Amino acid sequence: MERCRKHTKLFVAQNPASRLRLMICVFLLAGMMSSCNDWLDILPNNEQVTDNYWKSKEDVEAVIASGYYYLRQAVPSFIIWGEVRGGTIYTTNTAAAYLQNFNITPSNTVCNYASVYKVIGMANSVLKYAPSVMTEDDTYYASIMNSHLCEAYFLRAYCYLLLVKNYRDVPLVIEAYVNDDAEYSTPKSTEAEIIAQVKQDVKDAIATGAAKTEYEDTDGLYWTSKGRATRWALYALMADACLWNHDYDECIQYCNYILDVEENDFSNRPRFISNPSQWFEIFYPGNSNESIFEVQWESSSKYAQSNNYGSLFAINASSVYKYTDYAVGKLIEETDEALANTVDREGRIGRMLYCSYKSLATNQLDYAKQSQLFVWKYKGTDVVAGDPRPQEDANFILYRVAEIILMKAEALIMKGESSWASAVELINTIRRRASLNDLDIVVEETDERTMLEAVMHEREMEFLAEGKRWYDLLRVARYDHGDGVYRQWFVDEVVEGNQTTKDEWIRSVLLDENAWYMPIPYSEIEINPVLVQNPYYGTTK
Image (cartoon, rainbow, N blue to C red; front, side):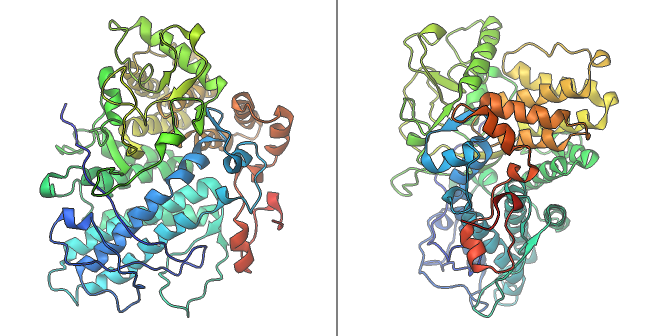
């Protein structure tokens, strides 16, 4: 299978003003950017963007590049927010452990969302000012401008969906702030209002007709179609937002825009990797055919970009993020099943042995000798039993086709029993790639909870350490039909997986729905008099 090669990538910029003030500072290019390679090597002049800044298409590209740069800066938060409360990954890191143990306070740095709002600020600036550049630069054609708008819409919409999942209600800022006369006191908007804006942004992007299915392969760089927002990324984001908002038919529609070969017969359409032995190519070298959007790093001497995964996912006891005992039990159980279905017991077997995990045991198949399993997907190489990759430049995947398949399966389950057979087949597609047996479910004899647990288990194992688990659990709790059954399942899963605090404490905290979400950072409350704290956390530090 042809793979997209990982190559030199991403963006350099200086930090803008922090907090929710959104006084956006970005920086001019050192020179003209005649090729993609030039664009990847931005050198900042540390000049503030104002409405006088926007003179050329290169100026617009510089601001878009800064948006991707800040997205990369936010990845550590993506991992913490999406994982440590979910019971499959845990940390002993002091700041993140407070979130993990449901003891976080508004002054904890873990709940600081400044880097996410920086991305939003860059997107807002492009959406406001890019159209005016057409009158300044004769080479800035409408097609190029609209393509830039699509990227900005994606960045803003993705960030707001992430904020909704973590804070529920946050300030909805869709205007660009470029001078000190702007009004910074912005109240929170409701989840419904923010989701509506997310969906509108995606629709507006698609309506331009300029959302790319791939980017030009300039100078032999193949990462751009995975590291910049494409039509496929917009579809994936919309499916995600619709599933969160219980818009099941709409979710299925956008999943099909990616999955339906007849509907989207593009040679560059992301495609599911069905061969179990190729699962690891999703992570090494990355930018695989299955990928839809990845946050990119490049550790070459020219760019010297490091994601610090060497310490975050070290293959030893010093690792910041480790599998919980609960997750290890599931890994071992699934690996045993996969091994029974695999001829080459020493090779890669789907997403398990030498893929999702690695241990320090001399014989990895002898579980009795394993003291700990470690996250391997960000550290491994194409050598099955080889040492960890020397470079700390594994990408962070926001969306891949396997998730689209399971999004569709989940939406089908929630639509009702008549759709369950189709959902089972989709789940089995993922299981077969993992060298696992098909689900032992007879849809005529099962119930919604059993079906939902099946898709959630598959998501848990497929996306370990990819920043998905907490949101999956939250969706189950939000599916509750008023009898408390799904909420209880949600709490039980969190309790079972958590191994660093008392069960009684977790159960008491999660009785309050407001505790499912993080506090608004105290630093924002302090400077914004109209910003109201999540009621669970009061108004104190």
